[in-house]
Length: 503
Image (cartoon, rainbow, N blue to C red; front, top):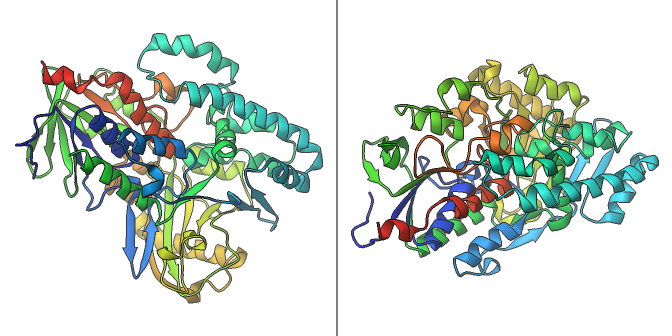
């Protein structure tokens, strides 16, 4: 499988080909490593996998890009021009947020249009909106620009950063912070829902994630022509141009440790692959409980992992229609009648509710290449409890899908059922079985205050020398900007390739 006979460079093995793993591979290639990315699925991408069926292209996971400079940097490091390879376009508006009573908040990056939307809901909250956006910008400057790509494996560094983190109000939740600035219940939802995009509960996620509002305003919300899969293919091309490999159908069974040092991996086929360093882009909880299952662990024992709170999961229904729904935007939030109580059902009570709030994605609104002529491609996503709920998704999936279809027909897509010609479903069980996510959590460990920064699994593993972690379950967290930033951390913690070549 592995061709290394003609390449003397120190070998870096990356387990998993999500955005974090691919970004790590590019950065390691630039620093002189021969890189092999191992992916257990038949195509790269991890959560950014792409389904193709019946002439439709469905992005399995992330659908928006909010910090394009992070991607541009990877192409630049590899000596390429991002814009020569990827057609990235801004979305305007970012989202339509449809409330249960039919009112719509059109969320965008233009200050005056946003003021008009806020005033449409509650004129008296305009001042609070301005003050909240200033707070968001302040949090963004410190928590993202200064700290997102810094290694938090040192308690000393964490304590040094503590005064700024305390000043930013990280002990409060996103929702609590938003409520300080908005009195209108609907506006409180509009400006607090963002943690759901990275697996967090707005009621408990640390207020640091209020930074997302400023991130979106600063850089916009973008989509890649050809879908998110086009970004995956572009990153794979960068890796291969550096002389690296991305090998699919290559599930990793174990990370091999000798004398406290990672020395390679064993594949599910039984094949051994040696490495100077190992980077795990697998779910961090799975990395420790499965890939290091035979290695004594000091911090991340099975019991320690089990004590962690895990993110919610997702039910995702991908479908194609034989007609176009021109009134549906590229991104639409179809909210249900409850907010706080629904969040408690999902995160605290682990109860699958009969009502739901949905994210509806219609990429063919701006990219007709993703659907046959005259057709539309969609996915609709519903946040649901992870597998700790005990729900049997083999039995529940189809009734739940049908309930979502009914909701869409009643709100934004009348007569939807008659037009469906292709469909596919992804459940919490798939997140566990297909994506190796502990408890079927779609975003790994939940981003609470004491599960962030130093309290999260570190980018440099405590359990073995030359073992490093990237992706949603490590610092800084989930979401495309987060996982790409986790690969940025490696520049500070992974030794240069030359140190192995001369050893």
